[in-house]
Image (tube, rainbow, N blue to C red; front, side, top):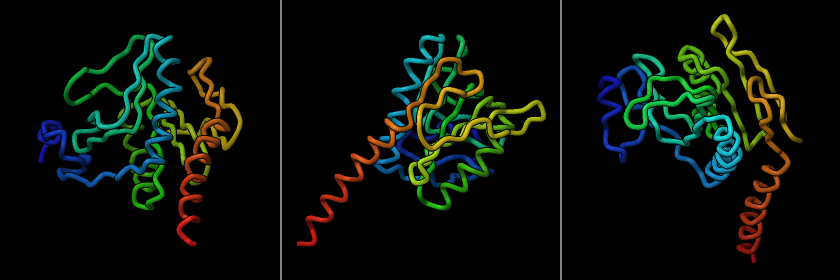
Length: 193
C-alpha cells in the first residue's frame, strides 16, 4: 500500500500507515475522549484568537513518504492552515497525543511518533497522560530533535514556548477525570452487594 492509497481508504477503515502497511490504531476509551475533548475546548478558543485552527482525531498526515499518522489533536497558528480535505502534508505548529494505558500505544506515542513528528517539522509535541497525571511538551530544536520544554502534573501551565497566553489548568482537568472515575468506582462498588 502507498501513502496515497492509505489516504484514500474509506473513513470507516481505521489505522495508521507504517512502511506500506495499515497499523492498527488505539481504540480510544471514554477517558481518552474526555481528555482530548478538554484539550480541544481549551485550545480552540485560544488558537482562533491567533488566527489558528484546531482539529481532533482522524485527519491523516503524511509525516514522511512511508509514515502516515492521525494525531489526537493538531493546531495551526497565525493564519497557517492545512488542506481542508485529503492527505495533509503541512506540519501543524502543535500536536497533542493523549497517552493510552496500553503499553504498545504508549510506546508508539512516546517513541515512534516523537521521532516522526520531529522529522515532519512539528514545532511542539505535547503528551498528556491521564494515568500518570502528567503533561509534557517537547520543542523542536535547531538540530531537528525534540527537547522537553514543559513538564507538569498539576496547577496552571502557562509556559509553553511560542504559545503566549495559553493557559492549561491541569487541576481542572484532573477534577473532571476524578468525577468520571468516581462514577465508575461507585457503580462497581454497587455490584458487590
